[in-house]
Length: 95
Image 1 (cartoon, rainbow, N blue to C red):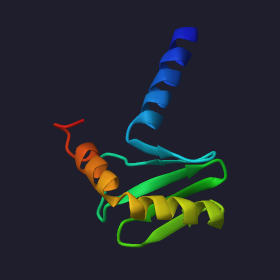
Image 2 (image 1 turned 90 degrees about the horizontal axis):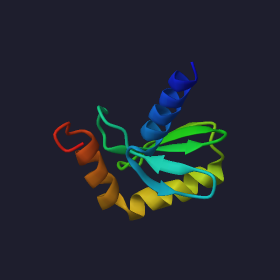
Image 3 (image 1 turned 60 degrees about the vertical axis):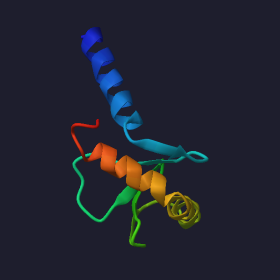
Image 4 (image 1 turned 180 degrees about the horizontal axis):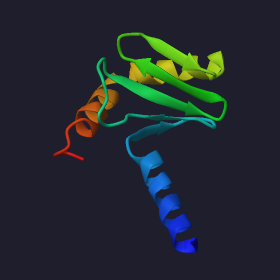
């Protein structure tokens, strides 16, 4: 049983680290694989999550507005990083 718990924990940590492109103050931005257009990043926060698209679309599910604003600014300022990670994560040969 203990071994299964360790494997599950390692898989969970691996999943969290995949596509992580920025860490803020208690939150982080990731890009997931097998995603749908438009190009977007995921904001993960203890209070919720949000999707921040490069086209300006934001879908917020519980993240404080101040954090969404900070993360949105980062995504806009670093669009090239988001796009490059998107291309890598959504091309199985580059993962």
